[in-house]
Image 1 (cartoon, one colour):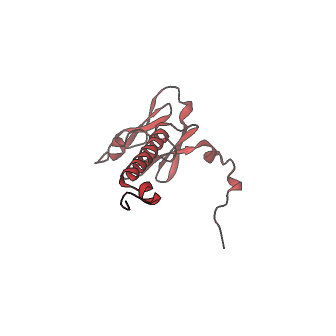
Image 2 (cartoon, rainbow, N blue to C red):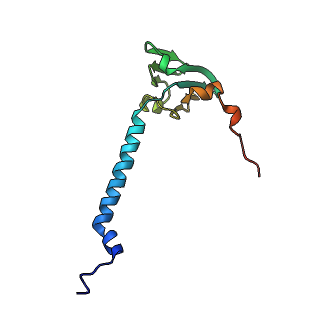
Image 3 (cartoon, rainbow, N blue to C red):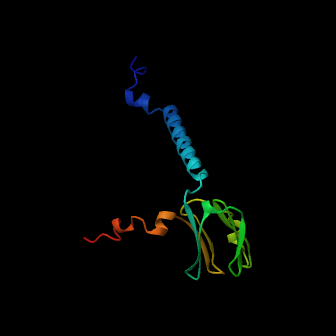
Length: 139
């Protein structure tokens, strides 16, 4: 009769319950990640830099027709809400293989041509509210 009595912790943390709990947690986190990765950036600004200097800033939501930009070594394709490298003269063409970017904090980098393309917040580019945010904390 003692064998049939299980404590609450034994029933709560049984292998079956743990498998169900972790499966549900993985499903929820995967769904959240999928949903967040599918939404393009609103008011996203593509910042194109070569040798560390800004060549172009493009508000991706305001692009009416797709167009190309030649940066000397890379040809960029700018479309509504996204930007990509369509061709490059570098040996590995990893920047082309990366595909289009459309969300904040995404970056395309072409090291041989010293080119970087990043998607940033429009508010970050305008400096809105930057005075209220501390640069560093000193103890």
